[in-house]
Structures are given as C-alpha cells and as structure tokens.
Length: 193
Image 1 (tube, rainbow, N blue to C red):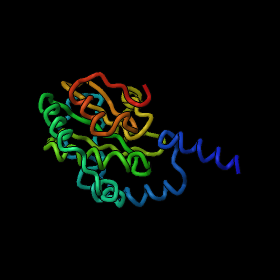
Image 2 (cartoon, one colour):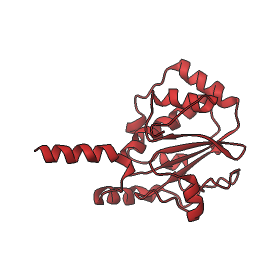
Image 3 (cartoon, rainbow, N blue to C red):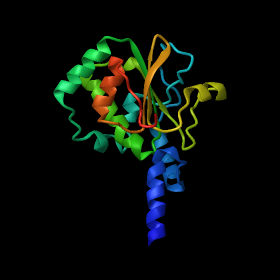
C-alpha cells in the first residue's frame, strides 16, 4: 500500500513534465483529428517562434476545453489591470501545450478566456500542440533547443521579436495575477525558477 502511494505521489509530481501514457496517446490521437497542420498566421516576428498547428477555434472544440473554462470568472479588477498592461505593449504570445496534459487542459482554456475578456488580438497568439516528449512541430532541433519547452503549458511572451517572460505549467499566485506580472513587465519568476 505504501509503495502504491509513493508511486502515485511521484507520478503526480512529474505531471506534464513526463512522457505520456498509452491511454493519453490514444486520447491525443483522437483529439488531434481537430488539430490543423499549420496556422494561417504569417505575422510572426521572431525566428524563435514555432508555427502554430492549431487555431483558437479548433482548440475550443476539444472535448476538455469547455469543462475547463466553465465557471472560471476572474476578478473584474484583475481583468481590467491585465487589459491595461497588455495595451502598453506589443506582445506576440506562443502557447505550447499538450492535448494529453492535465495541466494544459486546466490552464490553457483559462488563459484564452482571460485574453478574450481583455479584448486581446488573437492574431498575435500562436497555439502549438506538442507531443508527450515536448517535440515542437515544424522547427529545427536548434530552434527547439532555443525555445526550451520542457514542461507544458509554456506560455511565452515576445515583444519586438525577443522573449520578455514565460509562464510555465502552473501559477505561483493565480493565473490572472501571474499573467498581470508578466504583461506589465514586473519581476516574475515561473514556478521552476
């Protein structure tokens, strides 16, 4: 019994930092049917940005999207503060996630919801679905190494073609408060720094 509990705890700790199971693989394959090969977005400013392989609309069609965002109502004052911070900058945002990853399933719909509430222009958001080994589609191994995506979700903010900050896997305070810090340029360390 103790061994089973220890194994369960260890698995929970590595969460989306580990490779996916056969069940997750099957689930990912079925959900990948709605994933498009490439984004239509051509206005990428940084050579480090991967080409998106799923649109916001197709992301929202995944079976886990709506239940994850249902009932998520961030404080209106936080949403206004985030909108104000986003308007001061010209961000492009890459969202790396796994359709198989429970952290991605929890965070990404809420992040999209936040951006929608602020009126952010989604032509500046690039959604990239990675596999269980965090392999980024359509980029060279050198670019993948520079992107340094080891846990998902990883949300990278770029301004003028340069990374300004990233959110990795889980919030330190809350999703909206962490994103406000990132968007406003305040000092921010992700959960692994």
